[in-house]
Image (cartoon, rainbow, N blue to C red; front, side, top):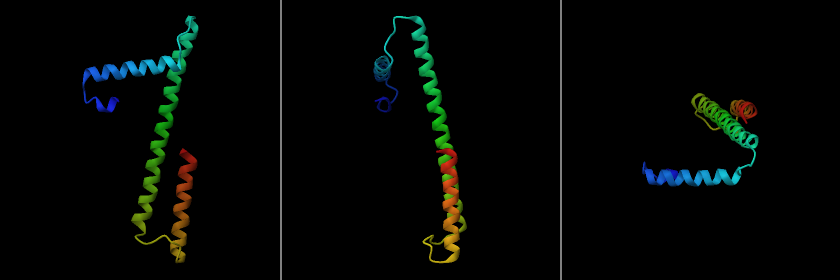
Length: 105
């Protein structure tokens, strides 16, 4: 695996060959040039789509972390719903988390 290479050039070359073989399996060669161009465009659009989803997920996770941090910082007490204030705090936290999940996921 690439993570195990630790800068070893031979290992990196082998990983590159494995990646090319996987891409050739997923996107077989075509006899027509326009299909090869479509294949490249498809791969780039897939990479772009996945990178956008990753960015959105990372942003969403940081928003969730921020919401949880705010709740913990504001209230250093249990959110088990044993008092009216705890119930209110629990509902606020639940609303914040639902808003983040709806926005980013």
